[in-house]
Image (tube, rainbow, N blue to C red; front, side, top):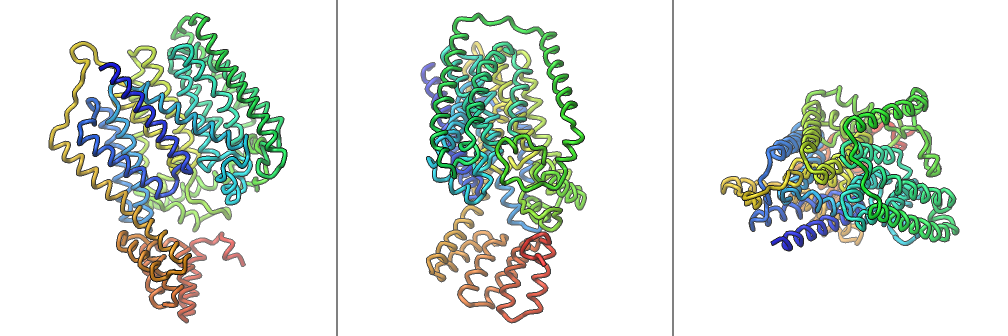
Length: 636
């Protein structure tokens, strides 16, 4: 029985690591087809697990029910916003996004036995470390992955800042920040060999973090480490792991500082390949040295005495004083003024220049616009997915932006006070529940909860300053961690006659749960199938088969009749076929389903011109200009 549980735990950790790696490697699973496919797989998995009695694995605790209800209420409010949003299609897509996060949260709650946090942390450690290491390999060995070159062509800034495989440097840096507390947990709560293995990747992680040139990522990593140190009862051991790993990490960053072509011109300089090979050797040796050194220390140096509460309080107070002194010495008023200024063109900046820049790169303007959207409709917002159109119409700088780069402000603008309260309540409840579970636990159990809280703290910071909510790989890790925090995984193990737990769902509850799961499956499948049909239509156009293209576009329209995109595709195909009247009818239908999208009005102006209705075309063009006045298309 014991060996069976160990095999099940190892299999669970392996599946989690593999799934996490795949989600990140698939460009962060940012696209609708990727994230909806993930949701369908997880939903079907939960249905099958429930059918064969594998879920739930333990009694569902009350905190998990409350947290799930809060996240479910936020999903419901997101879906209801389609009733007043300018684009029901975008609101429905945002509903699907929240549903994905909800089912991953439920996955952690339903499939985790009691006191199983360690096995899930192992899966997170392996998966996250693999993502970060492969990202570093892609830079140390330029041209080893074709996707890196493709991304640099689309987004030149990505040529310098390490983004592979998630296609966004700040997201990759956030994953590094997630990895640190998880590895540090095993560095203090394992045998000597595993402790050394847990410390050995730290220099590679530091090199990856430096190459992302992510200021937010460094801050998130610092937050994760500080939270872990504050909450774990093994502070001295954790500090020792940080000291050994930090010394080797400094060497790894120094090796990169001496190799400018590798850091700033990996795909342009002929010297980058040679510098990458030598840097790989140095960083690899530093990883080996850090692991061996800490493993030897763990094996032969006795554990230091446990820090008293007074010592811990004094240490925390000292950190706060040092942090305040550092902030005061950095001239915060001037830095804040620079942060708010209209951003300069930084595409040519080096990794180091960007890392120490105080520019907000437009964030102040994006955040201010989200606040303005909130003021226009404070209680319920303008509907999920509405920020992109709001920014285009009210932009203060000429830049295309889809998200406000702050989940909290974007939620406030799109879903109003109600939406923000629901979302903030979910986050706060998970954190408070995790903090309450620190008390009265063994050192190992406390350390696991502390590592999860550190990971969540890093996410809550990053999602407040960037579009981490939208880059699927990042919030999926955070949602899984929050599910562990409030679910059975971080509850103490049962002992005595109650050691074997056999949870049961009432038949009616099981029927309701399965029915809800099928409803969510349908909700995820609808936009997925419609998007696939639109893409098949576009492929048919490229192949010159307009008949097939029209059939596919009309199929997408029948699947998702409230969405503007299928009508737009019908209009474009009809226009290519010379059926201008049909094209005009289709584009007008598209506008009726999203009258805030300036691109639809621009296409309408072109089709109306071909139809000979010049006056109507001019009105459509004027409307497109009103909805996107900063666009270079309308300059002059």
